[in-house]
Image (cartoon, rainbow, N blue to C red; front, side):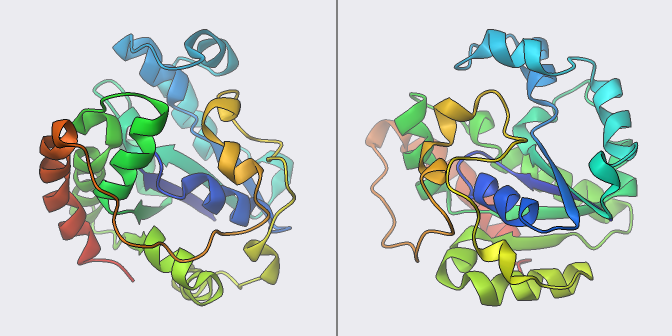
Length: 237
């Protein structure tokens, strides 16, 4: 089984990769289109040079690898993807051959977390528009893509992961609820910039509190992202 998990940044996506990566039957890959995205857009992200050197910049080659042999011949292949990486020139047909899963989070939380790492994000930086576009594409193919809210996972990790595994046709294993401190062997080279909190963790953080206050200058981004989030939220398990 190949699972493509689609989210924007700061969506609990790394913790979810660690949860699946701690299953004995599952291989994982971390944001395989990141170098392609940076090469095509010219964006100056932290560790840009290292990212470009660490991955193939050929989008077609990356797509082929996602459908090719699974690392260590594991029966489950969990692919962590960022929706904003799927720009023009990055193929999508390969998505027909995988189970597409969408991870959402309230944009106020995403914006507050992202802005702490990289100043003044715009809508396309945080992936909500692209996530909705990919969801609609999957449905146009006749797929029934799965949507899960990170808020629900943090509120009840075991209950929500059990439900998610059932929907995916996988057995739930308790090992998904914790992982070794210090990161995963398949972390992208960019991990030191973005993964500090999850590196320090051994499991999912507790339930989230009230929504953070979004600075006035980022309110337009929040208002633009909210309709996409609400539409996806209506589809969640």
